[in-house]
Length: 607
Image 1 (cartoon, helix red, strand yellow):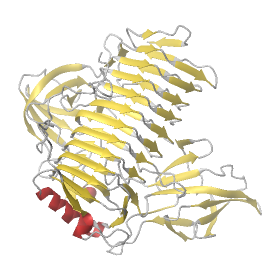
Image 2 (tube, helix red, strand yellow; image 1 turned 90 degrees about the vertical axis):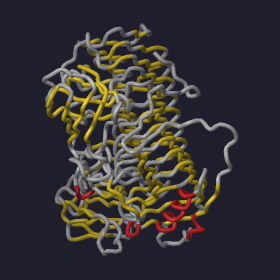
Image 3 (cartoon, helix red, strand yellow; image 1 turned 180 degrees about the vertical axis):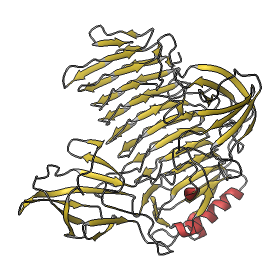
Image 4 (tube, one colour; image 1 turned 180 degrees about the horizontal axis):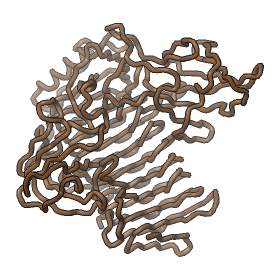
């Protein structure tokens, strides 16, 4: 087992060339050249103006790309407005978004870095304010790019945060008064509320929906918890009226007094039409000191990229704004990456899904024309159109029900979607490997690209107001999760899964260290190792090498560790404080070779 530290974190995996020519980072010998400096205002961007900054910034980035050598592109302090009408657009297919739905194939991108090496975008004191539905920035086909100091927000966020500020019973009818943030746009139409985005150049609004929209989560500021649950705001409505610029009174055809004063109902639609930000087919990308006040769509996605670092970033709505939601879904996702995926010294506060998710993608074997050829398909409707393989990549074939390896092989040829167009079918991939495979793999097996799996370092972050898990990770390379603080996540704080039947997020864990963290009242097991294998046999574990050490657990009625189908667990030097009813401290299901060193712990073994 590898003891990986922050100062020696390396990955010995081969380079991941990718479909669009990734390459690994080479050390620079001798003295580094002095970077050229460009300023977006020299190209027409005007901080403080509501005019569209997108054309000027695009011109500045083209100029930066034309410089031979390193470049610093500066955003002086101030607000920069980006409107979708003149933004750059690219056809892109992104993991866990809208799959192959042709309505959303084009992504609107506010700041696009494409095919540029050795670039620093610096913007301390600058705020990028997006209008409509857009990706904040994308780094595509680039190497050694840093984005530093910028703040990103939306003029009209696509989540409605409605706070109950009053309630009671009058004339036999219950009522609530809800308050929404200043930036939230709405109109009362009879007994219904229409929420909407801004009117754009075409005259149409960017988005719209009614009442509870399609999804709600519930934030309790006094209890410092956020959870998923039903929305009672629009049940049995008798009347609705605006009672101020930001307040709405809802009267009901019932008499039970509401008991949710101070609660915030966070409502949104469910279509993840854009990534919030995107790092695609790139290497050596660092996001540092950024402030994400709101991300529409699917968070910051690093896809098919190598050596991506996110550090000292803040994912949190603007304090004092009445807003509590900073993300439409996940905050950060690494999909099919390699090298080292690092997230350090960040604040994650107020997502609508998991703050960090690191995974690969299992593809279902749909057909096997011969012993060296496989027809693969994307099985989950939210993921399609991505290239998954390059010649020379190592693949592993697993039994779907057990997640046990059947065979490994090297990719020889591949016909697959490009991720950039619709030239090839978006849901299928034809793979030819260099050696014969077992027969009868159709339907019962799935394929993972072993080459595109990263080492992971998640350190010194804070997680707050999370309705789901805080960290999901499935990768076979070394993982260290250390010195983080997990405050009351709605589910498990750390979740290790892997499945070939639901989300199809791939990867067995082989070397995971969870150390020096503080877990405060998670809603599920603090550390939950739960592969979704339908048939578990302790003689054939899915995961291996999980070490949980020197952590502090403050728990109610959940275990510190709940593990299934895992070999070689080590649980040592941890502190557990309970404030609720008695519960098992460690739960082991179909696990072998476990070493639980605290004799006073309540431990149960199942299966």
